[in-house]
Length: 147
Image (cartoon, rainbow, N blue to C red; front, side):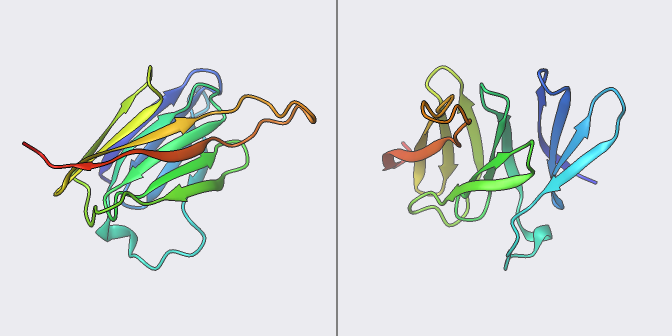
């Protein structure tokens, strides 16, 4: 099995490893498989797209994944094993790589038309209920042509 991206959550003692068959979550100490993150209705064959990056967000409750086809970005709740949000990168039929800027809470997606920035805003808690809310995604800038 080819692993294309990985990240570690120290708080949950959990490893996220992405490959052609989804994002697999593993418990570090017991080495038990916690589950596989994959969208419920996927029309694209899993073997035709790569996961370019996975990152636990600062709360450690949510995991970000960036995918090759359409520069798709997904946000997962790792405790519920549910997809919380998804978006595609504008003008990006096939992303070539992705990198995470932790200080700016920004994901940079690289493709044939240049680079696009996806800004994340992670809300810690809902003031009324105290429940943790999922992060929001917004395209910070349009694709910029590569020089």
